[in-house]
Image 1 (tube, rainbow, N blue to C red):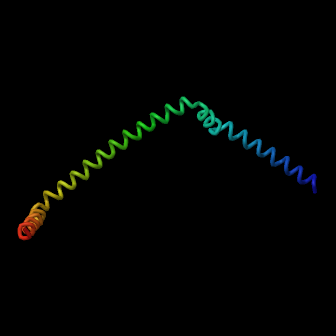
Image 2 (image 1 turned 60 degrees about the vertical axis):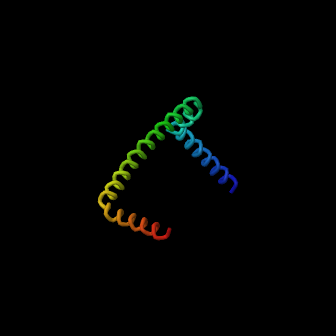
Image 3 (image 1 turned 45 degrees about the vertical axis):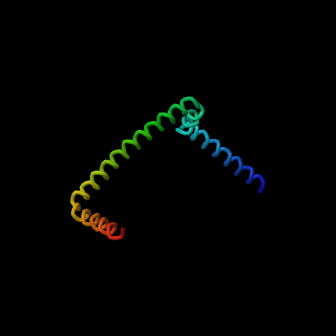
Length: 97
């Protein structure tokens, strides 16, 4: 029984070592090399942060302009309704003075 357990351990160890070799030979090894170069990693993360921030600023500007345009169209189309509402508020304020 103990020989079978030892053989199984040796097989598992060999499979584990083979798997580690495969991982290191593929992108995992390249990723580890990339993480070791801290200067390159810092510069790349900094540039990516700038690009993301610029993208968000442009996106929010476009979205804000679109929302502002839609709101402006709504106000122009419903001006009589809004003016009646404002006139009613003014009448209430004057009568309660």
